[in-house]
Image: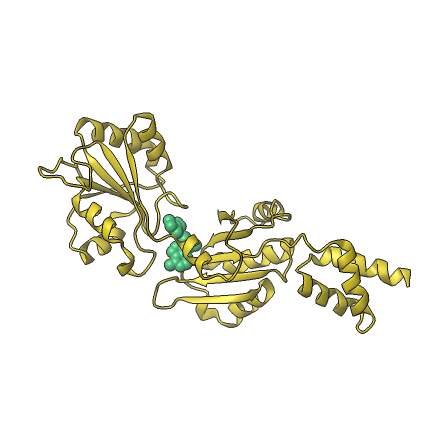
Length: 293
Ligand code: SAM
């Protein structure tokens, strides 16, 4: 698909190219396209879409007839230079969109921005929906500081080693995950970071079957296993950060109270639940206390 300069291009303050707009699109509910995104997509000379077939549903919903061309991960490097040359030569204004949400957030576009910046082509953001921000906004976990981890590796060893790096992370952590790996992700989080951490599993946000599960990592896993019908669709996992405020001395105080009433196993379990601390550490402290007494 060739892009051609429109005669009466009137995209916001830009009357002439070359320029690139990075346009966010809905993550489910088509009504979440912003007014500005609508105007830009309608007005530009061409749209670079991760998957034109997928995006044609959105465009036809809004009666937008701007030509689209594919731009995805597999051909990103190969066609970027060609696109940048064409944008400069024909003085084009183009928009980049992904299948859903904000381009470049676990989506193609990085090479395009890099090349555009090297060739001094202005790049304009048109913000809108993004699954990670949407999930954080309803998560009930601290949002003042957070880390986005995107998709973890599908290989268990590699996934756990990435999680190892988050052992001391105090900030809220956000993951993206596919339905066929959501249980494996929760298992790995439980193994490496502890099963009592608070987690929010946000599924199918803004869509018909939207569901939000809030609880501990082990409870979230149990919930999904006992409701296989919800192990479908798209997931964002928002995980509470580690609580470094509980010192060993504080943990020992909690354990002392618990060990006076319940056995070592239950005391360890309750202490982990109360403090969000790792089981290995709590268990070691509990053994130490028992030996002292
Ligand atoms: N660029 C997108 C954004 O701004 O969020 C993300 C694209 S990434 C390839 C797709 C992943 O985002 C999904 O596997 C899922 O983890 C998450 N995601 C996208 N839409 C979602 C939705 N409606 N509900 C929950 N998660 C979603």
